[in-house]
Amino acid sequence: MNSSPRILAFLPTLNDFAVLPQICAAIQALPGDYAVLVIDDGSYPPLDRATLPPGTMVGHLPENYGLGVATHVAMDHMLAHGYDVLVRLDSDGQHPVDKIPLLVDEVTADRADFAIGTRIDPHKGFGARILATRFISAYYRLIARWLTGSRVLGDLTSGFMAMNRRTASLMAKEPLERYPEPEMLMLGMLEGLRIARVPIKANEREFGRSTIGVNRAMLLFYRFNIFALSRLFDGAKRP
Amino acid sequence: MMKFVAVLVLAVGLFLLAKRRLIQIDMSFFLYVALVALAIGSLSPTFIDVVAHIFGIIYQPLAVILLALFILLCMVTLVAIYITRLGQRHTTLVRRFAAIELADEERRRAALKG
Image (cartoon, rainbow over all chains, first blue to last red; front, side, top):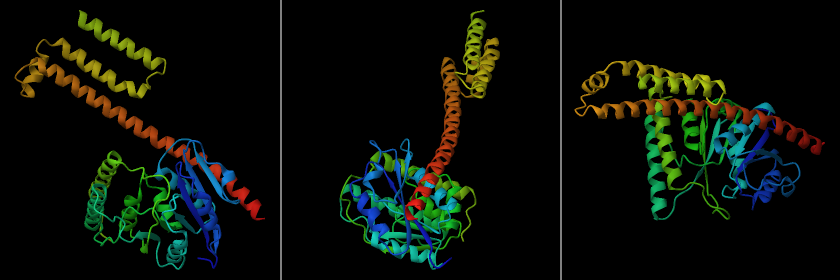
């Protein structure tokens, strides 16, 4: 990798514009060759480009296609325009911008193909929702360990990640659906990618709310099981 | 006689739907297969009895309902497969269009950077 890697920071957003200009500006202020790409995943009203700092690239999807398609679009762009690293972070300010270089360093220093910002104690508290999330995360880790033979540390659901071109090429061929993070991480493990986990302290969500309700959580849980079973039948080999 | 009229009306109806492209020709294939199978089955006065016997259904008329449910399930599955394929093709197109739009964005950014 060259001395000044080109980095594409990608923020998918759905009606979540409150802190987006500040996040874009903070990324552009980071040392290094950063380009910022915002994918508006079918927001209504659509994201107004004028609210973002100059130089921010904006892509509008005509409908809400979900994180999988938005991530695909960003990976396609990264691969087509010669970027070395793709960083993905949330547009609601939960992911600390100042930790981006830590993830990028893992990739540019060739220590990892795929770096995940793993939240420290991501699900604090004892509410029903928190307990359910903890249980599901533990289940995800158990299945991931069973399939891959590797111990999966931290949470599999973190959307704060950096990847090199090899990882993007691999993921771009896979069908990614809504909330694809657990599948992406497991795919990476199954394909023998070098995965680094960078502990981060996620910020509290300042605006908006999680789009994952009970129904969607059940659907995601079901989808993860289908994914795991499919990989099992495909004869997933432990790396 | 009425059985044949019913099958004929359904067959013509399906043909018209396919002809006017209201149903994709490929999708109408299974419906025709089901129609032909039912038409042949209806020729035999013991068809339902045989079906009921094979599946161990004691109350024979219930076999008609189960047969209809089976055909419906097959059709719903077929439609789900078509919709999934359509969704995948749609996603491919969305990615292509987004790539074109973002290529412009990249040019704009490069111009801004000088």
